[in-house]
Length: 119
Image (cartoon, rainbow, N blue to C red; front, side, top):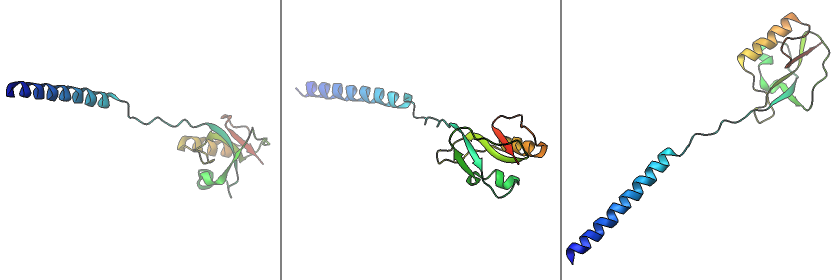
């Protein structure tokens, strides 16, 4: 009788270990990576105090604009189209700010259609 109990206990222990191993493997294979947030590009009106780089690269100097802004041609930043960070401020990469600064320096119509200038 004692041998039968030992075999039953050993069998249940083996099954528990087997199920535990499968559970651990399944948990390890589960994709726990966070999904990247998709940022939607929107137009933002520039309302900063100057055309200096420090002001232009400050997201707090922009207001989200619904639709496409109507800006006259000129040499000062009017609006730009950039990803919305989720709190209605633009995400401004260094390379994009460089393009904005280049457009301001040359005036006229920027080659990047996401930048609008005016007088």
